[in-house]
Image (cartoon, rainbow, N blue to C red; front, top):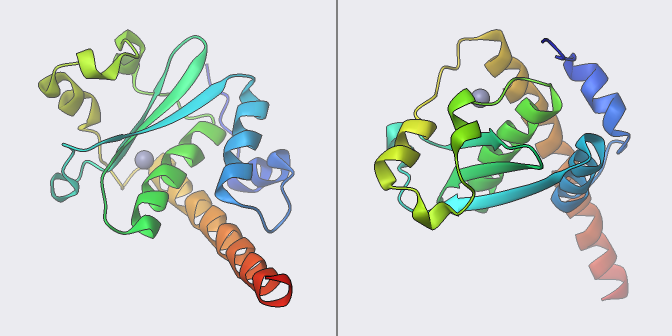
Amino acid sequence: MNNTVSVATAVDELALGETFTFDELVVAVERNRGRRLRIVELAELGVDDGLCAVWLGADHQDLILHAHSDSVLHRQQFVLHELAHIILGHNFDEEGQAVDFLLPDIPKETRLRLLRRQNLDTAEEVDAETLADIFAAAIRRSTRNSSRFAEIFG
Ligand SMILES: [Zn+2]
């Protein structure tokens, strides 16, 4: 089954305009897919190992696991990248389907196996990164807007 869409189509379908917050994006993705989206940090993930984030899909919800980063922007980028995969209709990690969502019960080795998936050379990865950058720019604009409001009304 191939339900992939282009980056431009994906942006249109979300109908969020050119400026939106991270939360608005998450809500739009949930609405689009008709299912919940959970975003969970796994503290033991090492960014140094190239393990930044992964998207796991179950029947009734999507789950994004991401590594810790002291930089909020960095962390946001991990998640935006996975959101992009979801929106672009890329298939989630097959192994993820077997994952029970009670994360504390998953042995660390299992989590790391699920998360060992970094290949930035494929077309899917390039598209996901392109879309993640579009999201990041829109969120940056919304942050600028809200700080301007804070200046005027705050
Ligand atoms: Zn990716």
